[in-house]
Length: 162
Image (cartoon, rainbow, N blue to C red; front, top):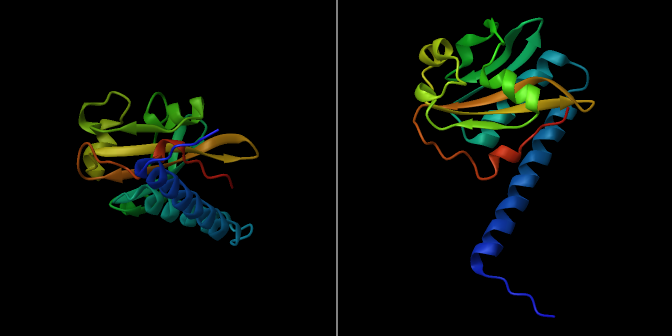
């Protein structure tokens, strides 16, 4: 039996190994923080921004019928503590479906909270659920200033388990 491999296959394999190493490093840096929940959220937020190559990031938690920003970096750093209805925005959808979502043009995407988008100024974003004990009631969101931003390859497969 013969196997064929081209340069693109090798490049994709190396990229996924590199990305997997970055995810493992992110998980390790989060795990080292022990039980300090605030520090864990801040580190997860920083790592989310780094892993997605975004201009900003937030960690949102579900509290009753609201999504609450509990950590924020970059262009979203001023929105720590902001509460908003969790009805049908991208964060709530990502948590409910347990799948990552990408909006390439947030201005024209019905899943995007337009009030938040206008305030923060992001034009593309990725939202991925975060898991604890196989449950998700929080998510990370990477935001960028331009439309059609190419988030790091494979972003839709990222999930941080803490």
